[in-house]
Image (cartoon, rainbow, N blue to C red; front, top):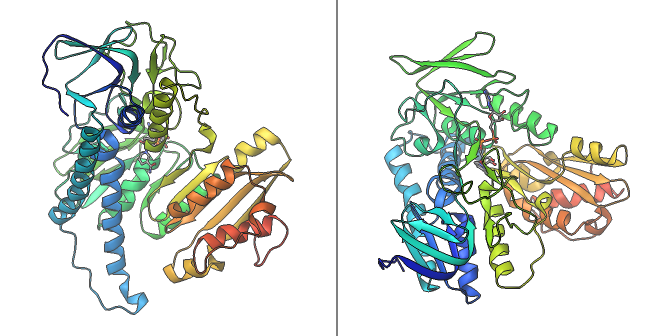
Length: 464
Ligand code: NAI
């Protein structure tokens, strides 16, 4: 229910500040466990993920896949012609997905008896959130205020020529040319969408490789695939300056080279939304704008917890969601097991997709030294991948004679494989445990199965 009560002070078991994935998951689970909950949100329940993040972006990526399927239909013997992108239609489809999910979520929140207060809240006392002049007092407070798109010094986002991902999601046209600044997750996803929609795309990345948090073999494969798609790549090219021109933007990278395009997308990371919200004033320990917590997500202030993108670590919706559930159960006295951050799966939904869990080979070698084995299984040997005409691989990293500590997949629909991969990782399975499992045929899961067979010393196909 949306609260219209105007009395100035009210008590709850739980006051949640921010209704994104972390905040709403916490509120829903807490209400389910019988706690009285108030959820404070300045925008819409659902937050970044639902309204300007994961969901709308993945809808664009799906539209991009449909466009590519139309373009490439001939190689499957299907006669179709690609006529072009109707951004109005794409946006209608995307917004329809978001609004259906939003309706479902608001219904759920209402059904659980959670009070929603609309407005910008701030921490005004150790267990008090102030919003619209009202004081909401909780036995516990959960800070879940999320993150925002960062920019760089000398780079002013104007929402017209120089965009963040939020602006990019509402464009009513396909730009003729785009510079994507930042070859991380957002950069690769938008580069992929725009290329499929027909734009000329250039990615500018300061580090020597794209998706630098991933295994090096993954970056190499994605770079190769992007080049094949005629996405221009400038790695090892830090941003220097930008100016707007009559036709768009002119960006200069360090060293002096310039690149011109109609629009520039700034995708250089997301920062925690914590400034001016009263956290520091109330003595909450912070570092570089992030809220510090222990593994039970408690801040240093008694009764105050934090979840999601404001807590240092992976800025992923499913992490915040799980943290929200953890905190609700903690407050309800269920003593949940702390979340293993290393076991959180990661997916980048570009074409090709990237999915991974656990350690890269480099990270494993720096932790375990030489006691590491790897195996790369090429999707060329997988029937379903051939049917889909996708290229890529499954790379496994294991401790010698020990469990699998990293799984890395590149290829179409790689994200759908991460469910099994994360069970293998989180259950500390040895390849020998996975090898006898029967995988349905023909699926790409078989590639995961065969990679484990090979690593267990029973290869069916050639591998490296
Ligand atoms: P990111 O940290 O993944 O990538 C930012 C990139 O910008 C880095 O590669 C960095 O080296 C580069 N960069 C920074 N300063 C630069 C400069 N001066 N010149 C050139 N390059 C520069 O951050 P991104 O892509 O903005 O995403 C933000 C967060 O959102 C990430 O934590 C990501 O995990 C999350 N996200 C997750 C998605 C998913 O799970 N599919 C989708 C989109 C975002």
